Image (cartoon, rainbow, N blue to C red; front, side):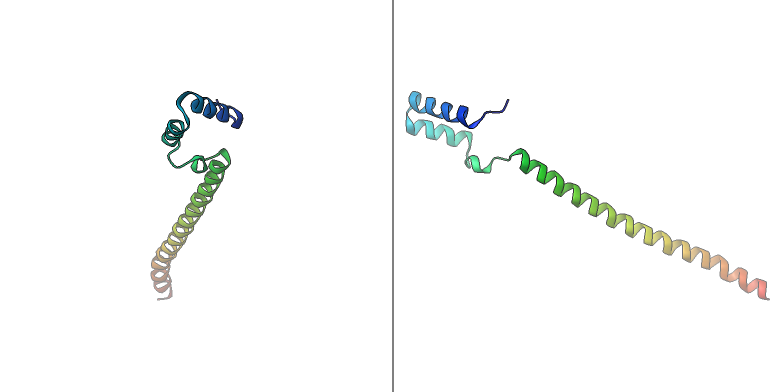
Length: 92
């Protein structure tokens, strides 16, 4: 259940009325040690997801390209290893 700004302000005001300003401020510092500016929003999480997805896609693309090059070089070497002796034996 999401708490909107009005509900949050009302809760803080009730804390101040009940505990006093200094104890309420201390309690809020315990709840949000670095302040509410450091809380992640849904937009922050979406941006992080997108960035991570791009990083993974780039990493997979790089690894697949490297694997494909290695496979092609290996196959070329294998074909040359068989083709050269067959060609020499056919010419003699």
